[in-house]
Amino acid sequence: MALIENTPAAIDAVERRSLFERIPAAYWLVGFVLLVMPTFASPFVLFQIFGWTFILGIIALSLMFLGGYGGMVSLAQMTFAGSAGYMLAIFGPSAITDISMNWPWYIAIPLALALAVLFGTLTGWLAVRTAGIYTIMITLAIAAAFFYFTRQNYTIFNGFSGFNGVLPPKLFGVDWRGSTAFYYLTLFWATLCYFAVLYLSRSPFGLALQGVRDNQRRMSALGYNANAHRVAAYAFAALLAGIGGILLTWQSAQISPGTAGIGPAIDILVIAVIGGLRHPVGAFIGAFIYVILKTFALDALVAVGLSGERFQLLIGLGFLVIVFWSPDGILGLWAKWRDSRGKDPLRDRGGDTP
Amino acid sequence: MNAPAKVSDRLSATGTANALELRNVSKYFGALAALEDINITVRPGERRAVLGSNGAGKTTLFNCVTGDFLATTGNIRFFGEDISEFPPHERIRRGLRRTYQISLLFTGLSVRDNIYLSCVGVSRRRFSFLRPRRDDALMAAADNLVDVVHLTDDRDTLVSNLSYGQQRQLEIAMALAGAPRFILFDEPAAGLSPTERRELVDILNGLPGHMGYIIIEHDMDVALRVAESVTMMHNGRIFKEGKPAEIEEDPEVQALYLGGDDG
Ligand SMILES: Nc1ncnc2c1ncn2[C@@H]1O[C@H](COP(=O)(O)OP(=O)(O)O)[C@@H](O)[C@H]1O
Ligand SMILES: [Mg+2]
Image 1 (cartoon, protein in one colour):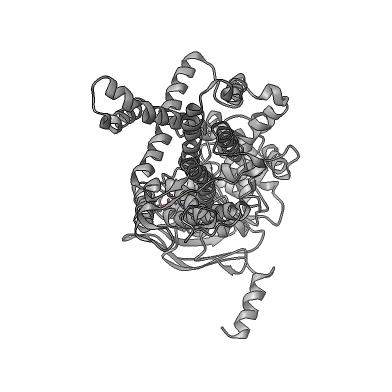
Image 2 (cartoon, chains in turn yellow, purple):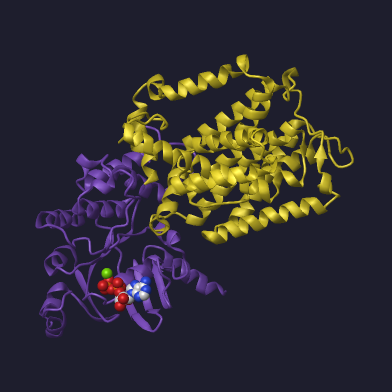
């Protein structure tokens, strides 16, 4: 069972080793490559491929947290991200000066995140009363409602065209939409969110969430309010999604109803499932595959004489193949391969299995 | 609400109240009456055994007290407070605990972490985002309970790797987490070896005097050694209550229960 990787006792054993020993080689390697990436990668790769991967990864991570640890599948994560993006455009600066308040970033960003968390909490409050397919339906309904509402409302959300010119602040005199700066900005937040989820998974809150996932009745008999834990998980997941949504809005410098439409909502689910829900790293693996496909599949298809429209079909087929072969996504495939090799490079404790 | 009622409510919520008081509790599953018109009073610190053949409604009784199921009718008071409508976790937080007849454990966790989770559940750290530190008080409490149920050597063993008897002991440790005021043990001795039974009796007898409990137990020998009063159940009803000796000698009981069909 998944709880195994999160045991405080295991942490205790691990923490007796030094920080250096505790971090497996794979982390050092990946960390190093990511840090020096701007020295050899093109601006397009930095901004479009990796920037986008990190952003979608953060939003998919919010779903991984809910699904993997909480056993809840939400289709509203992109909606929380989109709501944060909209709030940023409304409270901060944008080209739509009639609506945007142009407040400073240190007010606009926390406000945007707080409202996304509030939105997520309310959604969670509704969704935890249901299970399985009904949770998916409720969150899908919320995603659809948000999409149509933003498209029809012109006084606050500026309707069909949304907001453009939503730019990050020139903090420290840096243009944060420059390819290298944006790369490091998104890398920083992706790393922070990733380790926050890892850390949280072994906190009392994270453990309790996994306990509720595995046996709600037992948890109630231990004094836990199962639904309160689920709602809190939605709130935290909405915070992650909100961070992703703000970065996403800065990347394209705009936000419109399509950003958080039904298509993108489902894409997040696809990304999380392709990567695998059993470990936070799955969200980023899934996001990377998605971005690569979305960026190059079109050219590749045209090159072999097929219509570029087939791109969605390709993603769909890939999704089918992965889900068919390994319900745990790429991570599941990895785990199978690792088991056959008897090594454990992904888990942050190396081979230190209890 | 008028003032006198409030005062009496508050009075009964303090030390003078009974640990557990069931008034006319019934539980129906469709047309089946699993419990019918149950009245039980247990004083604080009292230790009571519940006996009865399979299907008598003993586990259902526990489920109604803990809120795993809501009773169809009737009223349940815990240390004077009406808990009839409370969700399970609210009852647990008031000092009620239980074990399950069929162990409900987190098999992917170690022994210690199962108990740690139990300790956190009745503490204020349920929502803590901070991982336990090495000097964590709750972790120390968990370690202590590991010792109480003689699982010290298996502290870090995964629950799925424990023997059946050890899993039963772990169930008990999880019920002892926090500061229980009253515990419901659902057949903790079932399936245990004679040695394990003796250990169980020692654990129960070693509990602090103020900790009352109800234990469901088929084995009269065990029941006699851990309880000072006995309640006999049959077909969802209570049909005898008394001291163990009285119950043992009662001809009706002997005919019905000790006379053979103790399933
Ligand atoms: N969840 C349930 N749904 C339907 N019937 C149940 C349920 N739980 C118990 N029962 C029925 O209630 C009766 C009492 O069961 P139970 O309390 O488990 O008996 P005991 O623990 O004394 O062996 C039995 O007839 C059983 O089939
Ligand atoms: Mg039973």
